[in-house]
Length: 427
Image (cartoon, rainbow, N blue to C red):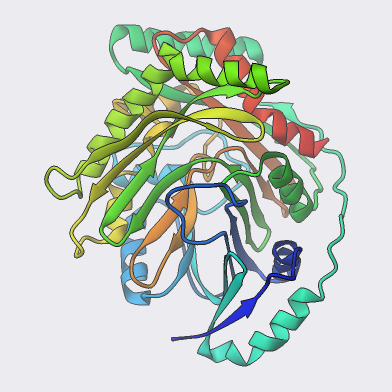
């Protein structure tokens, strides 16, 4: 049981930054920020969960079964992540590529302290064991001084050279032309060794550059995720399930006129539309595993959304489920998300494993939460920096969808466009 109090925060313009500074003293932190981006499906403007009362940490083997037991028994707020390599739990797949980040495949925790921001209201929900700390914590939070702590410059290296990237995309095109797959998301890693950064500083800079609707600051002891993700993986509201895959990207223009032209061209681009539609078909199939008969519907197809750095093509696919359907089962039967795999899904994941050189881990996985009633909301971990402070190893990956119309040079340029924000904050 939780004690709940509400605060009027209309006069606290820096509250989100103060919450983050205060939160960073804890071992476990999940901060989710919508950056006030207008979206149809949303519960809160920002959410902070800190300090684990209980937790689950595991590798991929039987991970979804373990998560089902944890979620169904806790019946409380749970925050955490699903790594891409949980694919090995749902299918006969492996992940043998290089991994120096060494994050667990799955991690969730039940927070002692929870903060929910909506408009001018802050709702604090504390477990009864620590509810006597609510007022003193709030006073501590609003007295936190907002200041900038500069990170050292990081020397970023590229795991796959441009030449090898072009060769690997050409190999993927061979698989496509042979009919093994129609589309696959191919990613490459950028990394830094002996990296000493201030994770909170890097997160705030990355978030300020992009202001995406699914930003995340995640900390589990010495492991960090600093995410400026624009993409939702999956959300459940009562018996409605919502998936919003992104496929199709173009840069922002230098002025309004150029921006409008670029946006229009993206909307009309047949290659980008075909990428998006293939993934929509995959998502429809994934949702059908738990959907009530005839309830899978495409609400939006290939709509272009504008973000600070790029325009993106997004579709919205929804379904209805029985109220007895386990939320973990809905996730298990749709994971990993179609936008980061390809079609057919299993064949694409096998080819991805063959051609990529780094284990994806949390990159292209998902971060989010379960509510006490079994609703949930998860993002897609892209446009993100992963950092193991103990090993001083920093990593970020970028990718693009390869279809029969793909031109390797153009795909490489799209990857660099997506990497811009990460390079900028690490300078």
